[in-house]
Image (cartoon, rainbow, N blue to C red; front, side, top):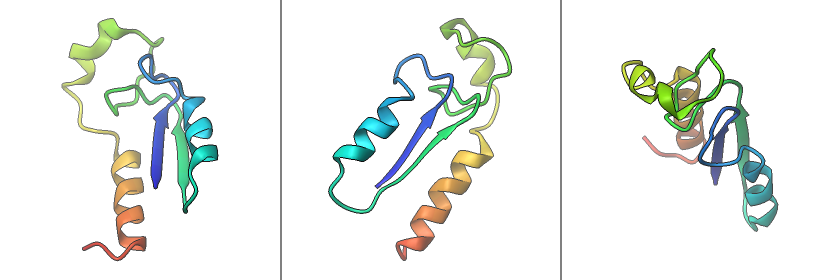
Length: 78
């Protein structure tokens, strides 16, 4: 299981990444990405739902894409 949380996620507590990982019985890889929001974009400003429209004009954070690709490759997905 790949768990990715955002340090600035206001909808899912970043601490839940560790909580979920502790409950998983199989292999788990977990990450809390600095400055990442629930929208999978980094934000240099203070966490706020009001920034959603601005953040959605940006691409998904490349670090998140990289984590997903590496996880899939490690599991033999093509």
